[in-house]
Length: 135
Image (tube, helix red, strand yellow):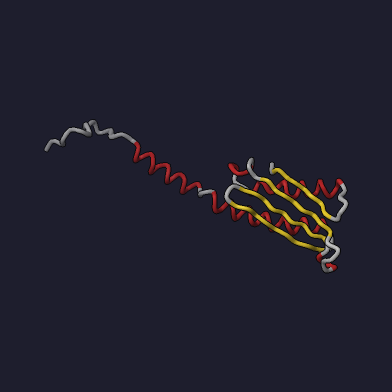
């Protein structure tokens, strides 16, 4: 599970919204590589921007810290739930891209393991490697 840090600014949250954010953003860990999931953390800022335009008043910003990279998504819309949904979709797409870059394909890993295994296998022909070959 991703460690979540949820902050609110100019907005009084209810438990329903807090649970919604935890469910949506917390579920992104399944799109991350398994080795990274325990080290991932997300900082979520939900704010009501009264100076923003009418249709961009409620803003959700997510910054996800991963080893070697930081995923960032921000969006504003008419209500807070819609903003969370939009940002979740953006972060999900970035997490998939991160996983594709950092996880090798199973076929490639199998091929590389066979190559390494062949290099490290001893000569089984019964001929001593230090002795000259008989002609």
